[in-house]
Length: 485
Length: 81
Image (cartoon, rainbow over all chains, first blue to last red):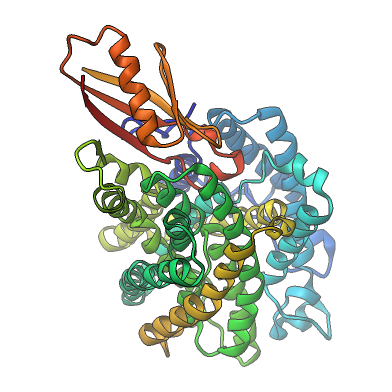
């Protein structure tokens, strides 16, 4: 049984809170490097390779004498322990989770390593170093794309395997954990370019206004007037398309007390469309507007629904755009395009509880017209607040605080932070990619009829163009800082 | 008097239950009527006002959806018995 009765409900047994715990455990372990002890340097990481024996390395200098295979085993052991603890707390079948997780981990690392083969990943100016004469120069994007393809193949053509992996394939849990780790990176980035980070945060707030006050009413009106959908279906679908995907659909369904099946059906649609957006948009934006990295990132945050798909799309976009820019001798710092995408999305996420509360009041007092008999508790806002944002903000502000108040500690802090925000975060991204593919079954689109048509039309005619226009208005001309600046 | 119940939905009807009784209804109006009559049938005759808090059991959602959210809704209704 899972019910929310107090402000602490879910802290022990919800995926959202477990993303915070997994995030903060590594955040705390990383911080210890300030005291001169590297507790996270055992983490394995991939490297661009032409010699397979050099494809995996150890992250921390303090662990320089470790065999990379030993680091990989250690990485598996630590993350298996943590995720299985979470699975047990969340009342999942731990034995099934462990088996599924182990296979996911192996697929993830295989895709990650293969995607870093020099012909796929090496930038042009490093071809000599790897002894190659041609390549795709996709950077880390090759691994992400490969992981997604492998996941999709499993999810759509090897369904028994997908069912076997389903207990462990938790893309939202993995990406929320990765976003907490990303908070560390944003903190480090803020040390270097505070004004830029502040501007991204500010314009993210404006995106929130667009999602709730522009997208939602337009889609709702189209659903009611053009597609003749009932009020409850229209409201749930409008939130799913306009705001933040599945979590918004669930929150809205709950707010208007819709039958759960409505939220379930709409959520299935959202997951499939989010995957389509993830496949199409990064390459499209990178190809159409290669000189507008931050515009593209922010537009992605407003367009792609579900945190997992948005972060994944932002990560691919970041890799593709930087790889393309590097061909012209421009070397943007990693992470800013991804951050533009995620920060925009997080702002939108944070207000879903407030929006659902407003909808609940409208439904009780105007639609159902039963004021006084049934009440709406303000606690609903907290129950629907995305808790992983707390972990993200804590990490961000902690590292920004270190830079502001204890600048002498920055070098030591970066030792642990570098491992958590880079190889650990990227591994969680890779797990997200594989898991998203595994849980996406395109055949579920069958029978969705008007819902699927409305979703597609709203996305192409309203959401994507308006999002891009808004992102362009705020960010055009902005580019990430150059490496080494 | 305050009473807590767990709320669910079986695809057709809302279901509210606690250790004492179970009520069902295709709409909330139907459900609330059943809850009220069940309360009247119990030892609540001497109470003038009863607040019933119904907390939705999120376990009713498919497992794959629980990673996106952990709360559907709680509702609270007040009866004059």
